[in-house]
Length: 133
Image 1 (tube, rainbow, N blue to C red):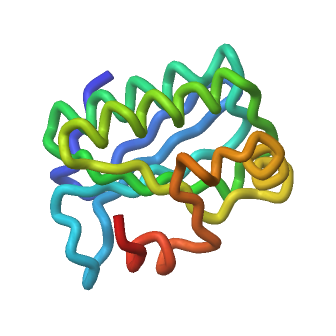
Image 2 (cartoon, one colour):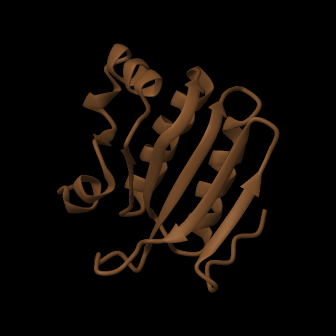
Image 3 (cartoon, rainbow, N blue to C red):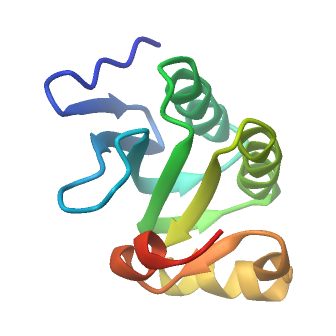
């Protein structure tokens, strides 16, 4: 999977999942960051696409990742595993994974699993951008 953000965005359209990747919009100070919008279901079959996108963002030196979950209908343990492993990988290289705007069902799963103690979860993009590491 090749990601080219020189034109400002990238799209992935899979069976269960759609992803779009954009540069962090001005005036926010994250030239080494990206916003990934996730639409659909994050499950055993689609979670790998998110990991692939995060790995490609790391390869092009964009380790500060904001993940928009507002249009995610469903998430299973595979998706949670991707979030956890991505956070660990990004933290080791000075980056981060910040989740924002989780849908009601995703927010419920994140709360139930108590992943808020490990992952940065925010109500909206502005809160995610302005939060401290």
